Length: 438
Image (cartoon, rainbow, N blue to C red):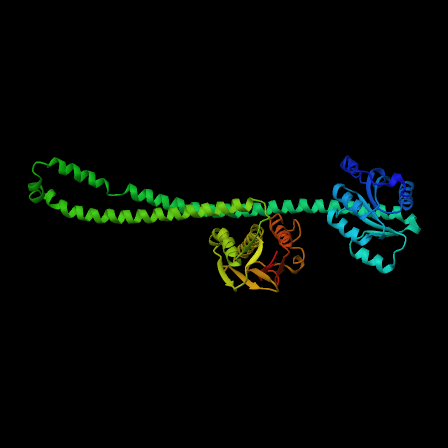
């Protein structure tokens, strides 16, 4: 008959949830209350485990599950700092419990505590994700194993938190770079708008349409003798010919004005598209969609077009036919814009007359490669391994976020960015490789 003190209550694990977050503020596992789930069908063995932990200074609330059903219910409803499990149970086993634990509570260390565990079973368990294993005949190993497992779990949590913060900082930095590029593009288009509007205002100011008012006044003054005025008066005789010339001139003025207005409309539409792209980029990433790679690259080129013109950079497109890409559009745009901007700066710094960027799209192994090649200042060999590092830059006004954020975004998309350069003054090529399916 099982010991009543280890029989599962209606929901004992719910107590582990209450107050558990407050107790986790301390990093010392022995000085805070641990919420432990223990899969064990033998009450005496469960008691030995509890005593072993208490003797080593662990303050624990242990929820004992004696069957598959109790374990599954507990892991669904509770939150645990540690999971212990026997390997062999009448209708369940430790490996199956491990798979469920890794799925439902992946951050909780999982330690097998078994009376009989062969070497092959132990290796299989560790490969499947178990943190450690302890034989019931050697429970003196349990406390050190628990202490080490909790320490590693805490370190992993801190690492994941730091990684998320770094991703967010890098994402914001990437957005800032895109915003700078967008502002340059908008500024270039606004210059065109200003020129077109100034020309339109000047042509309207000089328009001969005001001469029509003078002609109307002259005709009104000769209403009574209009026929003789047009046939006998020197001024009246010139009026029909002048009206024909004026009509031609005004038609030309209208054509020019309509053309200038059309250019204004196109420029305003261009600004609208740039702003819309920036607004869509500013939204959080996460939408996975099927995209045509050529369209993506051309969109990135459009967003950098003003910079290319300003720095007199020639763009060469080498686009192979590639399959559609299933990925996150705005992350890919972030990467491409950063790579193109970086290449533009490299060309500009070289001060050479024949500045050129070659954008290449090619097929990989179940992937697509997008390369940005420049003939700029190149990269010194010692910097090739540091180029994607956080904060690394060779520019006086650089901050080292652009390439770093691009590398992080590529990794999030299960892709990569690589760089090649033959050295200073010999240009560089950055290649983004992305899987066809995200």
